[in-house]
Image 1 (cartoon, rainbow, N blue to C red):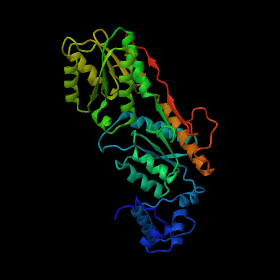
Image 2 (cartoon, one colour):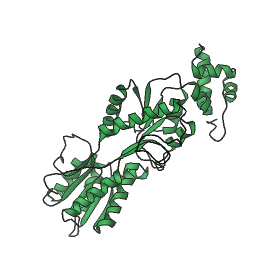
Image 3 (cartoon, rainbow, N blue to C red):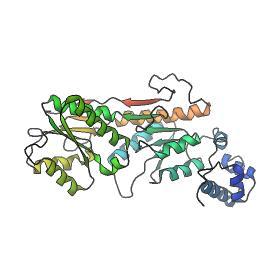
Image 4 (cartoon, one colour):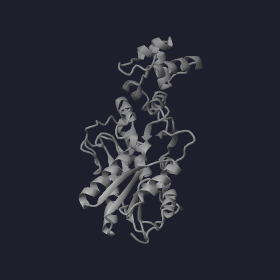
Length: 354
């Protein structure tokens, strides 16, 4: 039997499933009394099976801080994204300044992983990465009233705390830069098809910005999804740059593949920047890779990590103080309901030539 998502699960339900008294379940949740390991495991198993996370039990745990933040970033085993590691390190550094440790949660079953973390009381708050525009993890944590902060833009930004680069504005800025350099045929190489299909916020908002810029500037801006397959990517770039009406400017949001993209441009007979303007959107700061001489918008990793950690800690404090969700706060960078958030304005760093 799976978790009872559609019905309210009570402490009595958990007790009945575990074969113990309701008071024993309370003791396991609060840690206020010593319970045998066998009984504790039985109660935990019942909690996981039933999906029991009532607000009342959450309140009882408020005075028992773990001083741990859970960083949830679903990832495919064996895969590697430099941006995930960079954020994990910077968030850990920011958390340590406030006396907190970071628990890295990489399970691809996002809600299932959070059910385990929240149900076992392992973390005071959760920081979500790889945020989708309609992210089920957000609704799960909202339903429980569990503190969270997002590293990415959700569908309803006024309702949850988040920080992100303004990806839409970044794409607009990059396209305008290309147009300002005299380019009228511009290709926007978005993130991968997988990320677009998952409706990751940065992917969706980047494409939206490219299309918005096309309407504003009147330039011919075509959007092309990228791919993690090196051979397929090389073929796409080769095809894109062939023909007399091929683009003279390339705006790249898939910056992880920038070295391969530049190599494909050279193989197609295009010199950068002499024959082809290339602008990178979302490049990691201080990356020592080919393309550092190009115009680029860097991802403000350190600033985002510091801010999302602050928002997570504030969510913990607000919950401890029973601050109502609609109570105005004293932070100017907040949504209409008093929920803190921040979109960081993009900054274009010039290259040798646009």
